[in-house]
Length: 110
Image 1 (spheres, rainbow, N blue to C red):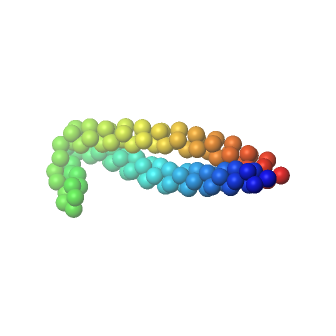
Image 2 (cartoon, rainbow, N blue to C red):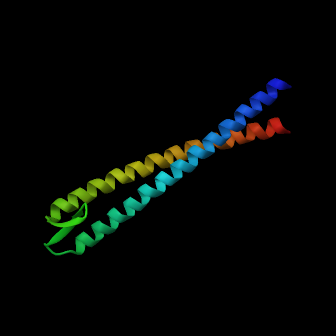
Image 3 (cartoon, helix red, strand yellow):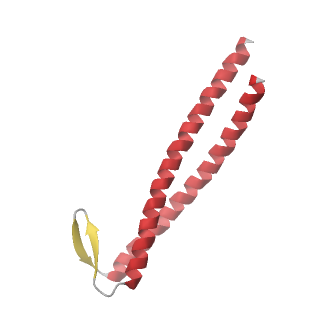
């Protein structure tokens, strides 16, 4: 009986760790999604802009070439999309693991 309790306690602890990891992952994913939305918005604004464009570097705004800035933003967008996609895969994997572990814990409790 003591071994079952130790096993159950270990699984509950693992469950808590996975839940915390999932929560941290969701926060990171949300941050990347916000950055991605900003990049998409900037690309949209850039497509409507005339020849003279500016970008913010630190706390100053500097003149930039439209095509160069567009290339930079597209690269950033692609990278962020990749990160979000990878995080979605991790999230899916963690959710599956979490659900399986919850089922095991519930069986042991009953």
